[in-house]
Amino acid sequence: MNIQWYPGHMVKAKRKIQEDLKLVDVVIELLDARIPFSSRNPEVDDIVGNKKRIIVLNKSDLADEKTNRKWIQYFSKEDTRVVLVNSINGKGLKDVVTAANQLMKEKIDKLKSKGLLTKTVRALIIGIPNVGKSTFINKLAGKGIAQTGDRPGVTKSKQWIKVSKELELLDTPGILWPKFEDERVGFYLAFTGAIRDEILDIQELAVRLTELLMSKHPQLLATRYKLEGVDFSIQPEEMLRAIGKKRGCIIAGGEIDIQRASVMLLDDFRGGRIGNITLESPEDLEAQKEQEQ
Image 1: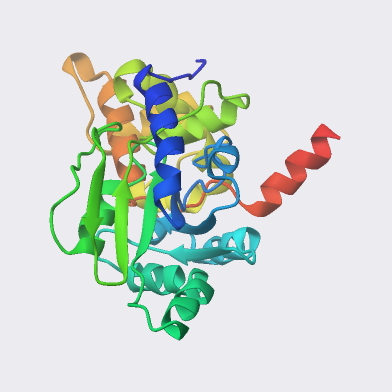
Image 2: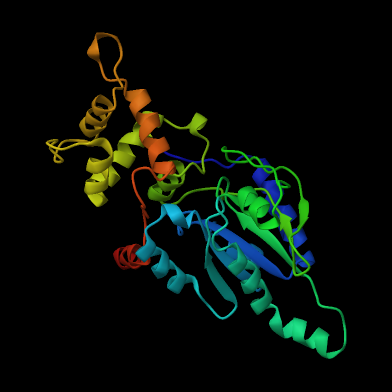
């Protein structure tokens, strides 16, 4: 399965973001903490340029804690702050406001020294579809302003949101990039729901996720689906059948309902019910670079 998804509206959205950058002081880039590299649009650096940046590792509660810390170290730079956030319960959101003020401290101090009013930091939110931008904004603002949905591509129009006297946000639609050069990136985005399920082969996607979990997180898989006694050397397709059988995904004649088992597995992974899982680490990037050399 070759996963590619770049609807025409994303081209227009990219141009609009480039126009809106002149209106803001800081860019807040949301990444999925489970796939920080794969959920990072490789075009963003060119789009954003030298703007100060806050990288928000969203859905950090679903990711592995130790790997979260590794990604913080990996992304941190002089003009970039990295914050762990759970947009559902609001954990880490105050750190975003603090980071914005830290990045703009020099400019704010200059204004104060001239006796001018405190500057409101204006920030633009950027990220791929379904990374949680609208939920992040609504929780930060304390009210349901931004449109939200469990499908990628819900945010439609430009919205300014007043968070406080210190911070104002500009929401933008989620954008992907024209082509996933690495097949793995496409699958990781699909696993986490950043690509519409309607254009995917859900059974093949679930088999690929099963294969990955068997390799990297067999104990979590075994615990979630009570797979004691199941031979983990079997093929991923057979493991998915075993999972379906354990969870009662049975159709007429005693056959396993693979489609139902596939949907269940993906839902469980996306909801963190299998465990706190990060699919990639900075070490993975270094290993990949070595292979390419």
